[in-house]
Amino acid sequence: MALMETFYLSHGAPTLAIDETVPARKFFQSWQHSVFKEKPSSILVISAHWETAQPTVNVVDRNDTIYDFYGFPKPLYQIKYTPPGAPKLARRVKELLMASGMDHVDEDKKRGLDHGAWVPLMFMYPEADIPVCQLSVQSDRDGTHHYNMGKALAPLREEGVLILGSGSAVHNLGSRLPHASPVPSWAMEFDNWLKDALIGGRYEDVNHYESKAPHPKMAHPWPDHFYPLHVAMGAAGEDSKARLVHGSWTDGTLSYASYQFTEPK
Image 1 (cartoon, rainbow, N blue to C red):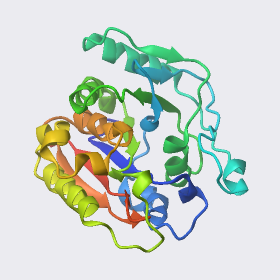
Image 2 (image 1 turned 90 degrees about the vertical axis):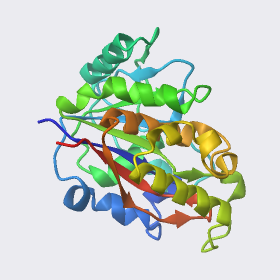
Image 3 (image 1 turned 30 degrees about the vertical axis):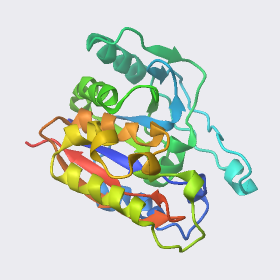
């Protein structure tokens, strides 16, 4: 079954997994019922929380749960989400990236799923029965590099693979505000610019957001949470249509804006 869609998901803080007051939680819980009803053959997650010098895939038979955060409530460390690995998909990802001209793609044969993957997936696919593979980001590269990675991976959709970028549309941990604080103007301006650019099909502007967007360094002091968007965008194709599927905020400066990209039929 070919899939027409890719997604960029804003996963926010790890506490999404245990905090029922986070608005985005209901969005992820409604995934199979309201957002994406098709069951993929496997899932490829490009997570902000795996940064490597070279593109890297995890090649495992069973994914462990990685607790890549510190100082959070104990119940968060007791959650287990261990879907099957997708070694065949991992090697297919490597094949496609290298065929596109990338010199080197590494394999990690021990790594499981970081919280950028397992926190949203535990709500989206609580059965944990769909094979999952992760692909890393390269934060020392640019948006175009990641967009081109996505373009190379587009054939996976024809193979029934659901491609998910996982980050945050606005992600400035150093500027977080108390609960229920209003969203600062700089954060809202960036979030609105992103929505307008994506819905308007201005993907090249998003690739060069550092010079096109308002307040890019405030919205993303480090680009790790933004680059998964570029991969999802590229994998859907340059003629794809973007749609905002969820929007909410926590801590004033964490946007949960999430997007669906659909290739025209």
